[in-house]
Image 1 (tube, rainbow, N blue to C red):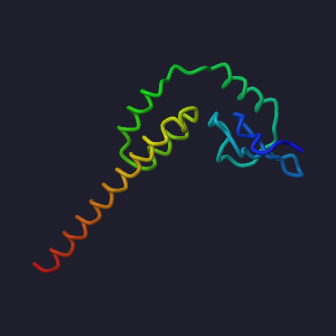
Image 2: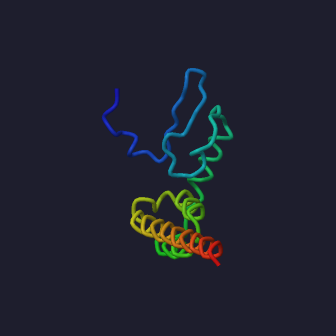
Image 3: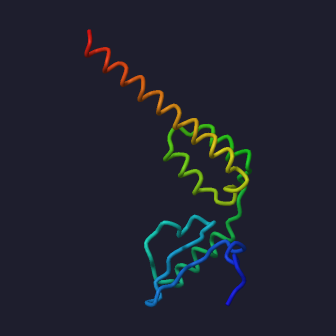
Length: 122
């Protein structure tokens, strides 16, 4: 028995099934989230150790600049996953850029539809 929301405090949480296959349910490292289940091994430990010792020189200002440079939702999502340590801090920036990209895509679609419709009536 553990206290509620205990996993909030962890950087990495694996869920194990009955066959000892691990799936990352929380991964601030970006190493395991969204990947297929796997057996935890020495290699898994080496990856985690390397991540722990790698450090980061990236600042939130660096990531903010990169957010503004994203041209697609896929680029934005990749950036979001690449820097899990800034997800909460920069969530408003990510959300704003997402709305901007979606708005731009909607405008492009509407313009394309207008051109199609006007070509049909000429």
